[in-house]
Length: 330
Image (cartoon, rainbow, N blue to C red):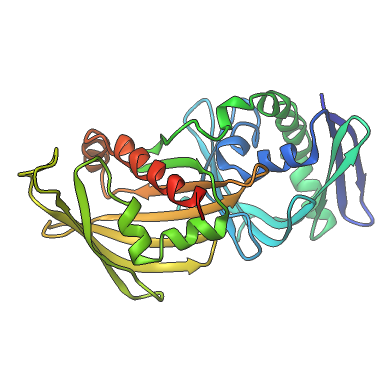
């Protein structure tokens, strides 16, 4: 059990949890910064978490759900107040409604996470600041302390599993819900480089091509929230896709926080009905690379399965491998 102490101060309205780990500070930080890793320990074993959003930057937000053994769901959120990688971050932590918005009928609290080096590895001190003595008693009575103990007890296994989150693993897609899929890939390149590769038309035309045999003649990129964008692809004459019809996607930039996060709508050109919402998040890694996370929200289960069945993940891996090759020489 990594927790070495838990102290509650009713006068200061705080609870402080100290835990020690036999890994460097950066490795422990990465476990909290990567949505694929934090969801493996954030929450008791019988209430595993799924992070639907996790943009770890000041002003960013996390949204997660914990699913119980009887099918019950408890939703929560973080609002990032400050981030000083890899030393500390501060959040407002609260309960959420099914749509991810704060549940104002339940308490919320401020939490600080402080990471430091020790002779044997690293230490994490988590301090929770409650708004009142009643809320402190309420949340402790709901099992907050025991829940943190159980969550911390799962971190060691995640920290040891280095290979599962190493660069070079390729593009991985994970089904989050009936209508959501998370695609993730570690790119060898900085956050700024990966962001630029998504926003410079001529660079994008060199890597965002999917399987071999296609060109990207049109890359009209949205510059500001509310602007439209349009991407089009065409087969290379005489290539492996020769004879296939050209296609494209269009949509609108819904939110943007350069160089970490943007949200867009997307619909295939010429197709009727609702499209998808795509949320791109870029997170810096210890090895100098960037974790690219794309959460795609579909209008239906049927459309989700149809698109996954087209080999979407393989096509994205081909594109991301090209992107990586472009950035290695930058």
